[in-house]
Image 1: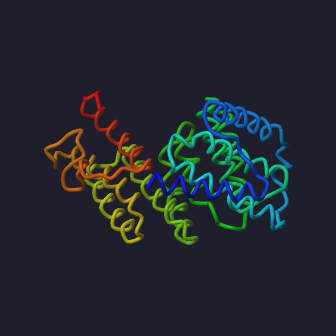
Image 2: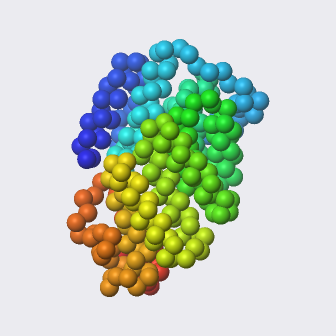
Length: 291
């Protein structure tokens, strides 16, 4: 799977180079340039007057639309491709925001601004700045007539930034809206990711474990029908966690039982991140602090 991501990333970079959109190589220098780019782009967004952001024209130039199309694909591929592509994730995210500020609105402009808000929190650690960017992204999404990217926008800003500043009880409705939007537009990956996040929200807001376990089962059925196996595997991890917590499994921190067997997992970067997250929750709840 990693090889497929790497091949797809290489194809995108090759096409973008032909369109005169070139990125530096990786390594320490590439990462340094990426971090500087994030800081500069955040500064650009903050210095752009609100009335300018709210009145950006819609881009119609075919060459710019083509570049943006490949850039937004590259953002998702580098995210799924894992840590080795982190520098490229940061660079492509900032490039998309630059194009929006310089040329106007694209279908995925709000989504790219959402990505910038989340990466700015990791790079700069300023929640107020991240929240400001995400609020602007949400308003931009509302302005766009197209629903393309809406599922990702709602997922990212709630998962990475709003969870620090807004009550979790308010998350289920927008995440459900993200799921529905993703289904309407064929964005099954982020639609099902919204569905998975809803399960996490109802757990963190104190719902009864039996109800959460039943919700997991129903959600997995939906995701399997959509043939999104990665998201289904992620949901099974949560399902097994709740079974462990309910005493329906002989295991505690090991995710093996009715829902899944961790020894049979085939890891992708996406599933590995899920696995570590769920195992960390289990270890904390059961008082086992060594994974």
